Structure formats: C-alpha cells, structure tokens
Image 1 (spheres, rainbow, N blue to C red):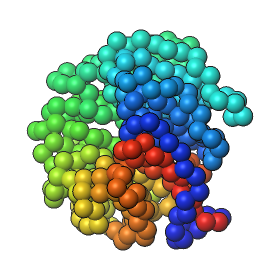
Image 2 (image 1 turned 90 degrees about the vertical axis):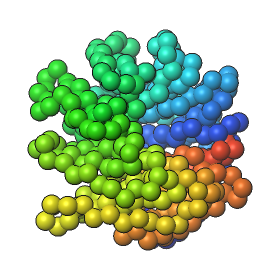
Image 3 (image 1 turned 180 degrees about the horizontal axis):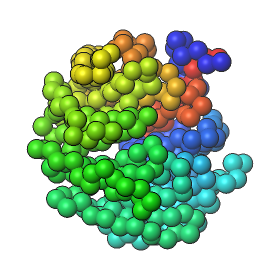
Amino acid sequence: MTNWQSELQLEWQGQLDDLVTAIACAPNGQSWAASSAAGEIGWNPRQQDLVKLQVGDGQSIDCIAFSADSRWLAAGGQSGQLLIWDCADVHQPPQLIHQLTVGKWIEHLAWHPIESQLAIGFGSQLSIWDLPTAREIATDKFDKSSIFDLAWHPTGAYLAMAGYKGIQIWADKDSKAPIQRIELDTASLKIAWSRDGCYLAAGNLDRTVTIIDWHNPTERWTLTGCPGKIRQIVWIASSTPCLAVASGIAIVLWQLTSDATAWEGQQLEGHQDIVTALAAHPQHPIFASGCADGHTCLWSVAGEIHQIITAGTDRFTALGWQADSEYLLTGSQLGAIELWAMPA
C-alpha cells in the first residue's frame, strides 16, 4: 500500500530536446507520454527507455491526452495535425493510425470521460471526433472569442468551453443542458468540473474565480483574492469540495464551508516565481505545484508543504500523476523528465 506521507524518491530520468509542454498519464496506469516545444512526443511504459513516437520538427506539440480506456493517445499543436496512436498492445510502442489535418493550431484536446470521443479546440472552433472511425460527429463555435479551455462533465453529457464573457455549454444529443451559456463580465481562461460534477469552476482574466452550482446554475460564487494571472485550476480529492488555483507566484486554496454557503480561501506561500503547473493526486488529499523558480512542492489539503523537489537552475513546466497514484512525473524547461515514486 502506498504511503503518501513518506517523501517521494527519484526513480527514473529521461530527456526531450526542448521545453516539456505537456505530460499525459494513461488511466490504466500502464504508460505515460510527454511532448515538447520542438514537436517531440515521447512514450514510456513505466521506467523503461523513452520511446520517441515523433521526432522534433520545430513545430510545438501543445496538448497530449489518453482516452478514458487508455486505448488511444492523441496529440496536437502548431502544425494543425491531429495525431492518433493505438495503444492496445501494452508490450509494444503505440502505432500511429490517424494523421488528420485540422488546418489550424490545435490548442486544446479533451477526451470524453466514458466514450472514445475527442473534443478539439482550435481558434473559436470546436470539433468532436469519434475514434477509431476518425469521423467528425459534431461541431460548434464559441460565439465571442477563441476557445480558451475545454472540460467534459464527469458524466460526459456536457462539454464546457471557456472564452470571452463566459462559458458556453455543448450538450450531447441525448442530453438536455439546463443552460447553453453562463454569462460573466470577464473572460474565463481556465475551467474545471469538480470530481462529482456538482460544481464548475472558472478562473477569469480579472483574477477572480467563479464557482457555479451545476444543479442550480443561477447559484454562483465570485471569489476574489488571487494575486496574479490564473494559469491553472484543479479539484483536490477531499471530503469537502476543495479547489487549488495557480495565480502568479502563489497558490490559492478554496474550500466549501460546512453549511455549503461560502468558500473559504487560503493563499499558500512557498514559491518565488510564476507557478506554471498543478496536479492533483488521484486519490489522496494532496497536490503538486511546479514553478519557474526550479521547485516542485507537494502540498496537503490543509495548505502545508510536505516536500520540495528541486531542479537546480532548470524550471518546471509540466506535472502529472500516474493513475495508480504511486508516481509523480515532472517536466522542465530544459526538456528533463523525472519520475518520482512514493515508497511502499
């Protein structure tokens, strides 16, 4: 049994040729993948050698993700190509089966939480594809700006799109969305559903956080106190709803009060530069934060630092927890990838 209260130990190191833009962990815990600003895509089954699925071509890969059943690996970026690998054989490197031309810089990928359907955001356009048929099954458009973020509801019935003046909701054809748009006075940059799907959180351009009660969408809270630009938001595994927000050089932790009428905020201090990445543990009430100051911190839900991982003169740019929750992956500006293990 994993003991998360023990400190993580470095177990494996690998290298890409440029800044690590994203890390994705397969939900079945069998493998993970990482991408770089040079266009590389590396795949790894546990702590074996890093397999290059794609060498760098100078065009950044900005988003990479596994499907819910771990069968498919998708990647997209500057080239406007949507790349799909088949990961069915866990003993062999994934096989590239689709290379679809979107024609515009792919900025966002989001897999349906149950089905093999992939949402793609490029500019103001939303496109939803079915795999393995590689058939486009739906399209939509954000009506006021480019799409800034995408997030599926845990049931897969709704897809939220963040942009200027609010959040637009795309509903599956078999579902009835309670609303089609959530109006805000500012642009929403990052969005995330709570793990039970009861709340939708939005990190906004004006440094506020909006939390919406999905069962009663007119009920919402506007939270202030974020000191800088909001770069990421994640929900923490906790007995009460808890949200971590990366804001400038700080992290703000928000928790719902016991009477469910308000959210209490706590600004966590420990970083000396921009917080660039957050990753919540799949099971335990802990999360990791990566920073441009060369430190990754492991935090408890109470806001206490449990461990600090140092990258020296390098800067952390991406984080990811393996689905089995025993390993934390870190990626850096200089292309270094490290796997940190929780002692048994």
